[in-house]
Image 1 (cartoon, rainbow, N blue to C red):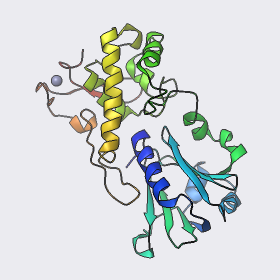
Image 2 (cartoon, rainbow, N blue to C red; image 1 turned 180 degrees about the horizontal axis):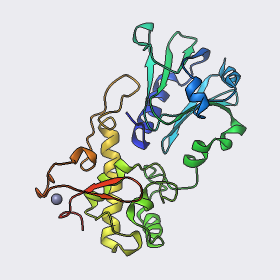
Image 3 (cartoon, rainbow, N blue to C red; image 1 turned 60 degrees about the vertical axis):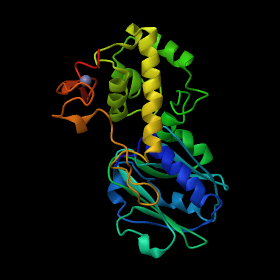
Length: 280
Ligand SMILES: [Zn+2]
């Protein structure tokens, strides 16, 4: 149910289609105390009052973060990255009992947000955005691998050449050269690129760098086209259809390409599943 880059992009696109131009009439927060305590929600709930009467100007995503921009200088920042559901409702019938935030529009449609893991729901003024850690992390200068203008092979290749760390640290986490890749995408990508998890970026040949670049694009494109990862629920309640080619779902299975049993390595905080034969 995690919402990573591909899923955040799917939600942002669907939200743009459904709620852009709509005006916020009211909101309701429920069961928020725990979220607030751990910093997943504004300390001062009155911040959400700023959203009232605002019209949705645009919804955009970068990395794992979704930004709902209003025409009154405020924003709703959503990042259900370790689990969450954002749903759009045409009527009362589909509104789930369990949600943390409900936003009602003047045309009687609504949006609900529920976090089931780490993430955030924040109401922020334009000038407060930079103070939010997740906004700063993902709306950054780091290249977005789904932006064709930013993510060119030339740029990616240079970043790899200058990095002597293992692929995990190069692709995922706070020192990654691209924004928004998770441990799940990383395992999927290096498997498809045929690269062993112990390989270091700066040691890759030109051909291997190209394979990594193409695999990154392919995994993200397929995951977006497939409606998100298999546990993900989109804005309309539809489940995603993308199953990673490699990852924890392949535990105790054989490689689909060569039949070799899948192995596991602990690398850079977290497990990496891989095929010892296909990945060199
Ligand atoms: Zn294999």
